[in-house]
Amino acid sequence: MVSLSLPYYLYKVTSVFLPTGSVGEPSPQPPTINEQEKRCERLEKLKRELQNIKNARDKLQGILANYTINNRINFETYMLEMQHDQVMTDLKRMPQGNSEALSKCKELTKENQWFNFRKCHLLIESKLKQHKVRMLRKNRQLLREQIALAECNIATKILCKEGSQKIKDHYTKQQQVG
Image 1 (tube, one colour):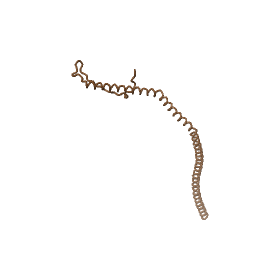
Image 2 (cartoon, rainbow, N blue to C red):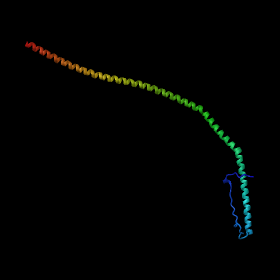
Image 3 (cartoon, rainbow, N blue to C red):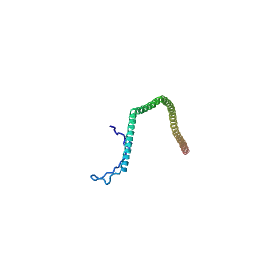
Image 4 (tube, rainbow, N blue to C red):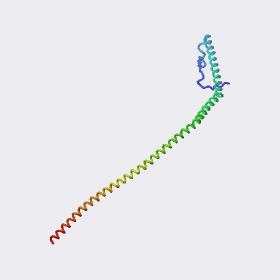
């Protein structure tokens, strides 16, 4: 027995309509010879189509059986070889990629060291400038205090001279009066 395990879209369906009478009633007219010949031709045609469908089914089953056994293994082997080739290519590129990464890392390390040196230099320079600014502010404050003391000293000298003059004047008056 041949199994019909092909997908449904591979079958060609042909419909045959045979006139039938009602159950229990005789047909109104007996078929003519011309109609019988047409029916026989139609039946032969359907038999040929059925045989062609069976042959096509058997052929497709053979192709499917061969594909399953041989081609599937070949395809999987081909895919594995492709994956293997890709992995091997990646492995061959890896040392070059590693050396490029190492070179870039060394370059970035040197650049980082230069920036760190520059940063330290700028920090020292900044601290020195901040120290100078503090010293200049202190000097400005001291200068203001010195100016204030000088002005106070001048005012004190003036007061002393005036006081001394008054004392002299007062002493001379007392000497003249006395």
